[in-house]
Image (tube, rainbow, N blue to C red):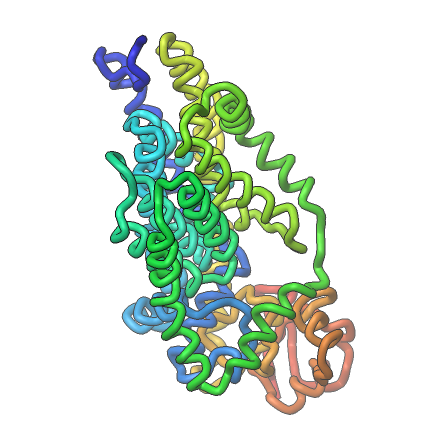
Length: 464
């Protein structure tokens, strides 16, 4: 049988595959520089800044994510200072996690299929995967969460032999760290436990292995919850991170975004299906397929399946799709190269060109710097949607997502909370306000004290 591997024997093969990798890597670089900043990114940088100012997460300001990302970003902000460019520095700080996701995907693929070529092809498919690159290079806790999830999963699939007790323990620690970054890690922890239980049933592992895995998971989580208890925030933390998220009013269907992801990665999904239908033959193959199915199912059941929910799923698709591609076409290297080039290389070039023509990220940084130039460090700012206020104080506990059907509205359906933006503006007298979620700009508390910015129609500066 012809070896199952990428063909690098001829110089032309090496050049063509090298060009593909280079194009995809260039796309990643352009994404980091030119992709517009999602308001979630501004939210996370601002949260890290607030913690750096001594504010207590959950108690002094609203947040519904776990805090480890903010502890990671705080030194970056402290080092770079309160400048618009610091937001870009925070995005650069996410690149080690992005690279880690690629490396962990390679290790996982090589460990499951005992084949380095599957790992390299999976990395290439991920580099050419626009949804993965877009969300994987952003400032959001999903990125380090996914890295530690993939690392934890890779530890369960060694290249040679079976996983030892030490690897189960390290896998658990990695999964536990992923949870401290973001509670969505439970969607990976659950199938990882199922894999170990399956191995116990088949007598390939003992109950000790499960115990070591669970012990490893607890090791990072226990100090996190101990800290929350010592802060006196356990009740508030639980409510904001679990019931509030579960009742989020902005519910939408899984299908439209799924169609978009499928259409952008047709080849990967098609060969993933082919792999599952025709080529998976060993227990470890099916264990990975089980994890992929559980992760895919989790997206279908959540209330608001945003694109970042796909981050842990897409590496599974890339790995299984790579195996399906190689099994189907490894005897016809030109056809394999053509399929990958057409499905990954050409879209990557188009995506890179569209990014290079976009300057929205620079405009956003200019807007952030404009606000910093107007508002002094002691001033407060009303943003309302985490769009431009990064390094200035807010006027209320709920400082973003105050629009209709968002977290403030969700909170008010569960608990009493008085929020009146006009009263807050009158009381706090912010130096600059946005028109976001303000229906009456002619209210005297605004009209008599604020004038429209000469540069931005939706911003108003306090004059008296």
